[in-house]
Image (cartoon, rainbow, N blue to C red):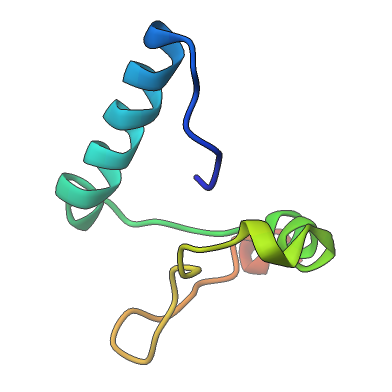
Length: 69
C-alpha cells in the first residue's frame, strides 16, 4: 500500500496496521500480484510510489493469471 498518511485518526491507525502486517506477516503467506495491479502501478503517478514492488530474484513475482490460461 502506498498512500499519504491520513489525517483522520481511525484511518491513520488502519494504514499503520496494514504496514505492520506487510512487515510482520507477509512471509507467512504465498503472495501474488495480478497483472491488473501491475498495470495500475505502471500507469500511476510515479512520484507517489516510494515502496518497492514485491518481486526480486530472492522473492520472485508470481503471475496470478498463470492458472487461468
